[in-house]
Length: 96
Length: 487
Image (cartoon, rainbow over all chains, first blue to last red; front, side, top):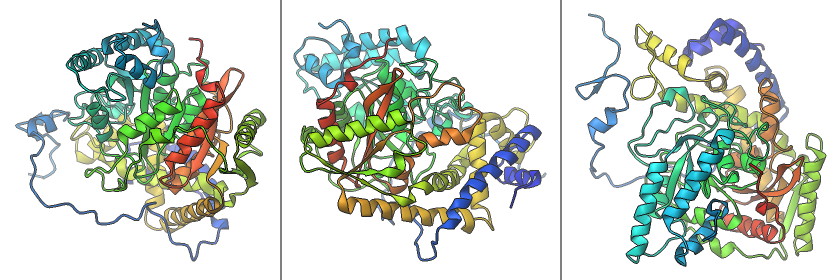
């Protein structure tokens, strides 16, 4: 099944990328080629195979729940593109 | 005092420091001058830090004068790939979206090197967010191969590999998700190791594909590789995937002896698609190891052909999730033309990411989306299990597997830029190792048209010691690692 340019546009929205028309055309071609190359995987019977999400069997790594000093707020927000009063400034998200 | 300190290895510099023949400041100055002399032709660095280097070197000299014990990397100039956090020093991932980002903490590996009082000379260039095989995908500029400036240095740790090969640093750190340490090490004629997944903390490494990423050393010889490993391996409470297992002293594995070592040579990597000259250099290397007492046998790893498609589903899936954090709110670029929140995200990411990164985010988002998850992501994870089993079976019979690091020597700048599929083949030998989470090393084993060829040695999980021993044995009986590019 080939992806259409409209499919690409909807994946771009999910990815929060405002692609140009040229980018959409190019990605439609490239991603379809990639998906075709993935088809070889269907040759393999994996019905009885467990998936590997992680190569080492580690789960639920706990530590003692003790408080530690936090990073200084001034330093944390210093990288923000727009900050005020020790907060990150964002566009309005609530209608007035 | 030797006049070209920058040509020496870390352990040779260490010996000179211990015998008080040179000062850390003299070493630092030699490297800073070398960077000034060659950097315009190689372009290894996104940021150079000569002031920090001189300041740290002066502190080292003061400590030595005060009688401090001289640890192996103390006063040794090192470079850090620009996707590892360095407190107060730009850390860009070679991406416009992080062009002005200054971390407020050090990555654990950087902190561990600093504890040994290494001397940072700069942050090295990479393919944007470590996605690529040539360093041409850097959001700023391509790095060039010191052996031939019309050729790529490999990638994504191309800046680190080029900096070591060009003697701009004594050692460097890289990160390896599908070959990003080993393939550039191969292309630039240096030693590069990807340790076992979990051996080295990833805390402070800016994530690309979290189940595959691993930090490792790029060095001028195998002895230095062991020294840097000693400095960076170990459990870290800040990385829950780091392994709580004893870390051996890797310098104890610097033993020139491969008697009885069982070498498997997977035929999948020496046939069609591999440059015959590269294949013959690898064959000669195996022959030499056999002459030195090892046993070698051709064998087959049938699932290796599936490594590329599995990787190009799993890595983008993890990348699409990891890179969701770049939204223009807390750090980095923010689009100036956005009217509301969603358009702020969309425009910031559109302006900040390069073409390769966007493609991978798109592929990953699609592979994880409702209705396609089973066909792509889950299927790839299952085939990943088959690849792991192939390696497990192989290590029942063999101690190491040997392949080329890459099927060819370094290709020309621009040569594969328009064909991402041809580019991806450069990683066909290295990718399965990341999928299986096991360690592997690349060391120089020959040259073609003046460009280095890499020998790729793979071992079972946590057996970096055997890699060091085999690589050291080969190095002691050859002189490929001593050659220098004419710059």
